[in-house]
Image (tube, rainbow, N blue to C red; front, top):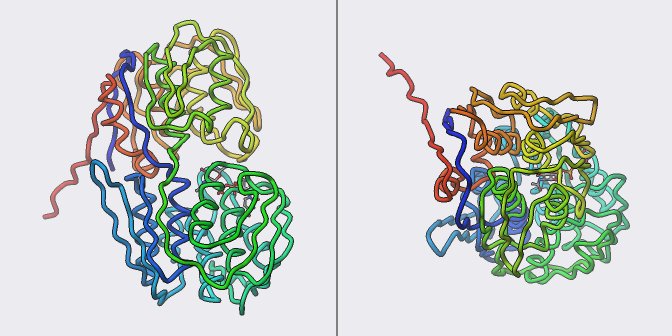
Length: 427
Ligand code: UD1
């Protein structure tokens, strides 16, 4: 298992280019299952979850070409034949978002067998809302041997009111409804930019979707979809992670190839803590400060403050002047990074869904363990301002969602290197 070795103390200076959004690319790849024709996706990030999705689709009989290069980062997915509409436990357990294939498989093939994701490191994360919605569209669903087994004739349009806002749930149902007979109205939908990006791809494929990116989405079902070419939006969480790192290290960082409109909640919060930012249509420049003021954060669905930034913000809060209260409203068990930050010298108390973070705690480098994707990013950001060397173990979590993070960090001045574990030779 790879580790990162980071020596703290350097401000981040220069320009970093943001990759395509993993959370937009995953549903876009699943959407290719809805048509016999090739779907071409550009700005695909080179991260492990994309490779997992490639394996998932290939196992179903899809042809997936994936090429990375200076100007490319492109995939062409051809699902002419879907010989085995199944997502195995082996793949789903490494990436929960695999459940995104459920809706498209049912809509196109009339059947699907998808492993239940099970408990995951940041809480229970059920998929009951996906299942309930698909049943309303006419699917018959049973759960057996840890799998969801679903079948239908043609799906029928329906009114679906989500009891709770779910991002991949909205995306799954949106994809299923495109090929249903008649109109579907989805209410209380996730408004994340990734949902709107998926709808934009689906409309290019011939779907009739209105309102994606708002709480109510209308879908007029069509008989079939065709191939299309689409460019994935920039990754707002990667951009925000670099913004926080630039602010915290007292750096001067230009975040290029991002969409500042998707970063509103974080930019507002950075202003509150005393950080100045300047934006253009596709970049944000952040100038750090040694005089950060504490500010509370409550995670919410978009356009609120993202749960996917809560951990990185906590690293920043450890250095602010005053106490910050961070409330996690989306997932019930998403504070594992706090314990590791405490090992580096942070003063954090967890009270249920709230973390009370005392500021101005000098951090010192330590051996720490990454427990999930965003927790790893939090430890990396903290290590940039810690005294001495931090070793982060299990960085495979960070490789799931950040493209070449150590190269990007190094290019703007961070002292970071990757250590691959050398296994003892078998005798
Ligand atoms: C997506 C993102 C993830 C982000 C999360 C919240 C992707 C691939 N992943 O995850 O990075 O952290 O949104 O912004 O886009 N819930 C149910 N029943 C369901 C579905 C969800 O109770 O059927 C609950 C979850 O347990 C959680 C909340 O709803 O408490 C939100 O989860 P959801 O939006 O579904 O998260 P994901 O789509 O899995």
